[in-house]
Amino acid sequence: MSNYKGKLNRQFPAKISTTAFTSIYILHLLKNNDHLYGQKILDMINEQMDARWQPSRGMVYPLLREMEDQGYVESWWSEPDKRSIRYYRLTEKGAEHLEKMKIKYKSSFREARKIIDTAIDEIYQGNI
Image 1: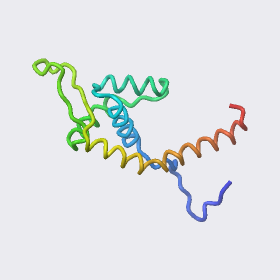
Image 2: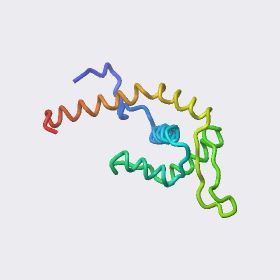
Image 3: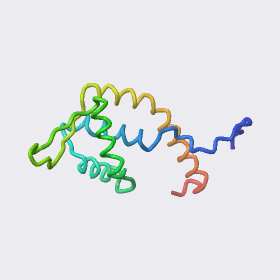
């Protein structure tokens, strides 16, 4: 065990919020796909995460609107008169933002993985 040197951090040290993580993941998906719609994004995350985690619709759709307001994605309706399916694509500004976010949170992802791997090794003594 390490010493805390007088300062106890009670928060899990992965310094990335669920919202930031979800934003990065959505931008990543859009980078690798010409156009997606909200439910397809949810389905892809669910599939890629092996149904272990999926953000809520109440998180994804507002994030998509916010990212559009910020110029990171652009959207269009498949049938504008019916407003049936709204597709999204990554903009150049969004691709640049994704790269900045990847750099910003890379150490947080590594730290979280290290902490979890250490806990698993300690708790299960390598029998997992």
